[in-house]
Image 1 (tube, rainbow, N blue to C red):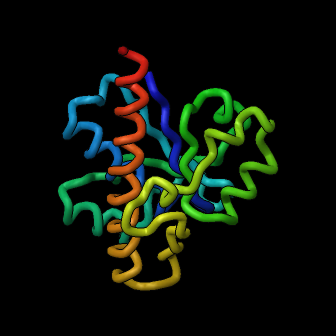
Image 2: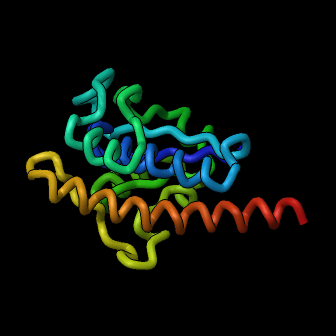
Length: 161
């Protein structure tokens, strides 16, 4: 089982959107039994909260329901548990790398390091903006998610060989 954790600051906008989009991508290729997906925040602001209503509405438009997700904070055990820790921006990336043991640094990467259209950019936080920001985040996490899935598929194929 390959385990993927998406991370942003509060775990109510970007990372649950990435989690929902990635669940759909994984299901579409029939790998839901081989890939486990979760999301978390670097801060505790929204622990236990549902995803932002605007994030939910944006994904509902794509047939993705994230209403059952609840915010949680990254725990130290996550560094051992997850194979991929996919972070939405440089600030949270640096935060996690300062916190994690050096042996885990290679698994902590920017979401858009997997992107073709937005390579190595930060996924901007749409919280204080309008619907356009959430639509932009959706485009970014879809593209990054496709690249991440391709990387995982190649990894799985290499394991099977």
